[in-house]
Length: 152
Image 1 (cartoon, rainbow, N blue to C red):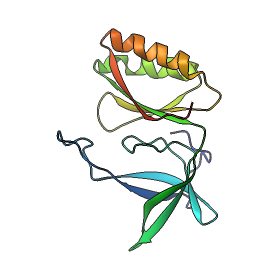
Image 2 (tube, rainbow, N blue to C red):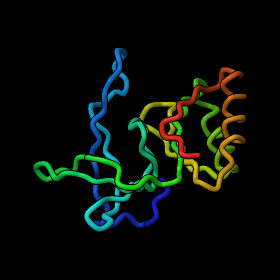
Image 3 (cartoon, rainbow, N blue to C red):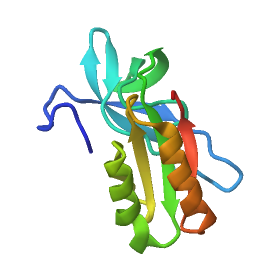
């Protein structure tokens, strides 16, 4: 994880996002929880979403406290970061792909699902270069990727 605050403190809160499953039962959960830092009365997302659509690292969100749990209500301010999800069919290629994306300025987090990782693309990265690389790997049947939140 690439947190702003490398030492997780009690300032981090979990914000829960309701997920809608498709006919195949994906994503595998009813909700996803994301680490966030309090920002005034709102929260700044501090990790990369695996399943939530339209949310990126650094977004400022509003959340409702429901029985002591914070549930996402709305996006207050979008960051300039984009989010991708990548699934490598050959799990031995995961580190190679993640390392290459890292060399292009991206960071990523591994999922509990084998071969799946989420990618954060900061605003200063060249999205077309990243897309070209992933498209090539997709043509080689190494991976598939999903554009979950594109701001480039």
